[in-house]
Image (cartoon, rainbow, N blue to C red; front, side, top):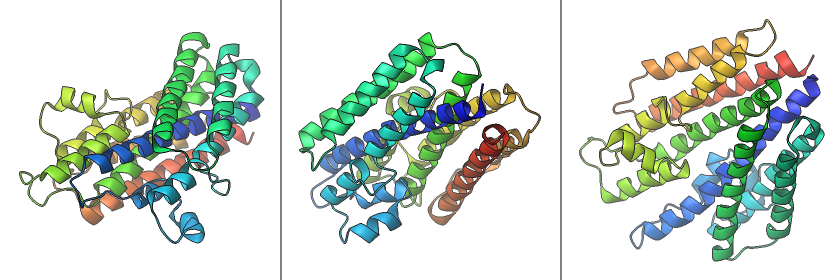
Length: 309
């Protein structure tokens, strides 16, 4: 397979995962603000920080209200990380490699892109926005399911999964860094209802709430949520699960360069060794920054090893 096509499939995996994650973030945050007591708000500015676009947002907006943030994240033509842009990039990368894929996948992606182009114009009413984002999440999962059920499990599919898991691991660390920074209580048993609702929103942002309750079987607490989303090896959106999947995928690719594998191994070791109990504030932020930097470097190494030949 040509390196150019491998890169197209890799970036399709990343952009489609990014679109799904953005849709879930916006819907969960809207629901969180409705669940919180009167006079308390989670705000919308944290979503901009989660996506890493705070500087670009501040250059265009003086306020970080719901209307400004939602428009910036979903439809702003000047934001290359918007949902609309992610759908466009996901489609374009898939178009370039569509001969390697089942025809149904291209049709599903094209339909999703056209739906986004039609809907993501101007300010959406809240109800319409919620319904569209909910449908988009299902559409993204349908594409992933069609790929799993109908595409040959060869290196072309591997590169889609590598992009997906790298993006997913990065998003999980970003959500934990921003949403978890100030939520962990000083004493484990002093979890206020407000903090409990916030940590539940962290789980729901990753569709992790039901699986957390199944595995942990305890009330929602910060340390347990961190442990589940960072170390659980069975939940597909935990950082450790993504790293294990990346390790298997990278090990099966042709090529002699094992630098990417070594970085993934180091990340796994760091996650297993770090003491999560009581981790909060700046130490939590530093850990998430380190993980994000290593994941970004892994992406660079993947590009140099397989896409620049």
